[in-house]
Length: 106
Length: 258
Image 1 (cartoon, rainbow over the protein chains, first blue to last red):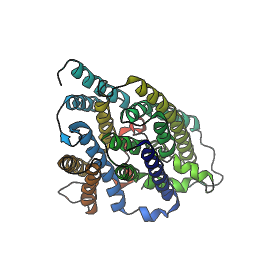
Image 2: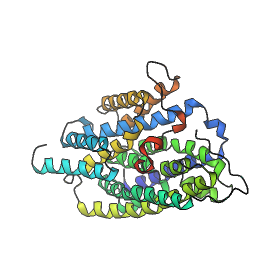
Image 3: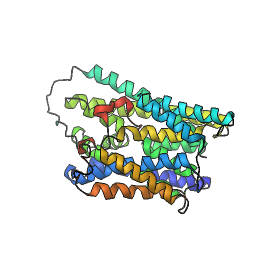
Image 4: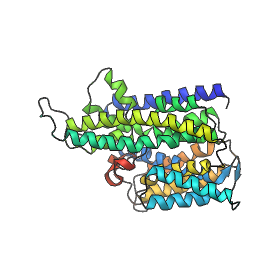
């Protein structure tokens, strides 16, 4: 995307996100009270985040690859299981990948 | 949907106001701090500092922001970036509906809408009294807004100075950030099944679909699974009152940014 297209996308996505928040405040509560709506909303969030983890870890362009990012993700998972704060998890993953690459291991 | 007691006129001022403010402050600090990682990752994905700052100011919902820059960084098109960010922000509508009975109508509602995020709603719903819930919502929402934006700028400037993102492992950091956002949402077998299915769909589509599309397509898995009533085979979906939130077990401090 060119810089101008990125700006348009930022403004459009921000407008949609704000409209979504405002809609929640404006529509009658029972419209959103259906269990199916709540269920799908929670699952969509999980699905998108899981897909983003996968794409961010295992792809380079359109190729599927295994590299230093997998070890970094494993380290992040261990840190999360140990209830480490978000910032620690993210920094740890960066350090693991950077060290492996600097050492020429991945 | 969390049902909060409506405020009663003449209700006594909440004695726990200071406790609420403290809670809001700690959540704001923890969340704001990882605005640094958002700022750095956005710049690593190819956005400039101003675009990064604009995302935090205008979009202000962390999951959507991370997703937006993730799609851009992967070379996805504008439609895929907007679509992914919008879908990830859909849960905020449920939060808004939960908060609406607490808040006054009027212009202030526009500000309330913008700070309707995981953290502000989590702190509000953790309170027993309406006055405390209202205070928790505003203190947390405004606190996170201020710190998230300040630290986004710091992160963007740091990321800008770092140069080559891969050398510093920032691509791996982005993966870890998504995992951190996903982690508290994996309670329940339905969520775990959907996450596994989403991974498979996204990776299968990557070689054949344009960038950004594999992630969007993975959302279909959630709709297919979530459409049916929770049956015995998939186990129970976490209580819908949890929405996409996880406050009761994870605690607000472990919540995703916005």
